[in-house]
Length: 297
Image 1 (cartoon, one colour):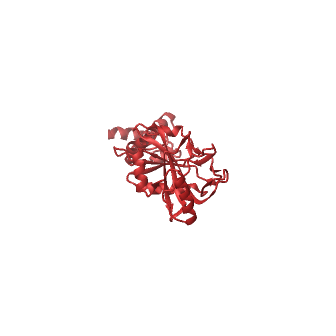
Image 2 (tube, helix red, strand yellow):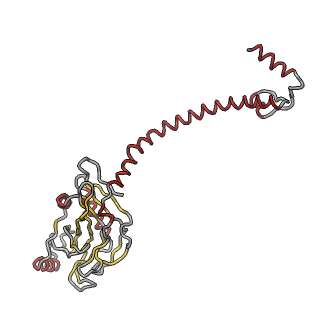
Image 3 (tube, one colour):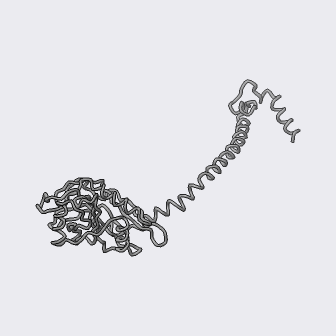
């Protein structure tokens, strides 16, 4: 083989018809080989150099692919076994009641009332227990005695932790549950929430409790009907966030947010009190029996 190379290469280099010492191509410079006059031989040598370079580049490319594969393996595992399954659970566990629920309540006179801004997925007993654990108490029904006591205690600044709340309606039904939490022992200042139970059930058989929570800051006459009532603070998100914070401390409770639930961010409630909101609905969800959280889109 060496003899063959010596004979062929030696003859090529010693033949002035083939060897052009002053003419060098880019491929010849890189390979350290002289350029050739005959085009066919020049093409063969260029092909030889390209093949050699191709093998080197293929090896480097394979190393790059291997490195990227090793780096991408943890990302793939996280997506395939973590993020994507959770994302599908988000759609699979969408509560059917959210597809047709209203966004605002109405008063007994049909006037638009407080906006809905909080919800809970679970049984009535679970909601009741969690509200009590969070420091909220059920409101008394509206009677002549409770109404007179509200007026007297408000004027005397005496605590009335279970004072009644006025009725609001959702699709013709007044609230199913009402809770409140006094602020500083003043009956005029309290957080209060009304809940309505949905007729629809999710795949786990749980209803949706949709609610409206606001902060009362004073007692006075309604701007629209002239009746004695509580006036609310304009920032209703503050009361919502307070209830979310209170319920988040209960066992195994998580919060999901639905953006853009309210399309009207500034308005007035049934008594003419102005309010503003970011339009989000907070949905509080307990962990299911199998330990996985119920998720929403």
